[in-house]
Image (cartoon, rainbow, N blue to C red; front, side, top):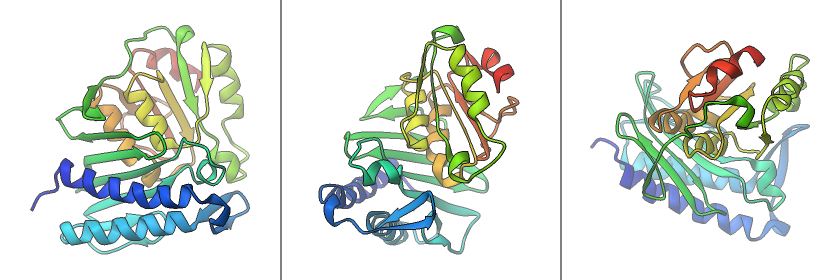
Length: 254
């Protein structure tokens, strides 16, 4: 049976309930470190385990790639999952974290969902069928002037101690835009571009599970997804999502 958005939403919202159970009891949350600046919590593990089992039950023909558990068989058609994108925010009791699930078949993103349980915002998209937030169609902003733009970013490159990072890039862009935001969840940042709340978002040194669902949602909302040179495609190490209207002004600053 082909995957459908309604079944996916039911599963992702159940995963959200599991995450909220942990979020509402942070004093007892088990937190460990994958590296000095990279956390994993009991909530990440529990949510991913549920998603893997629930998706396999509904769609046994699809493989699975989760941030915490890695890859299974059938990687030519697979679910790509970040159980909690924004674990640091989650562990601090902040609201900007999300569950990200995408379906990729033969290298093409077919379906995606990003759910922010603490905000009760559910974003989704299916290829060639538009993007939605809480069942209402969304579109990228109409902004065409970078000087009037709100831009989002993140600093995964600093978490990984990269010498070539985005600090200089951030300073240049900040001087040429009206506002800058750093929310802490790449999946949500992409959805905010799709919803017109941000005019563009960039980050470097991410993984596909951070951005797969969000990238499809941006594209279906009428936006662009490129690398830092403007090449269309989904490049986790250099991801730039925009409304399209400010892309040409933004690229020289990248």
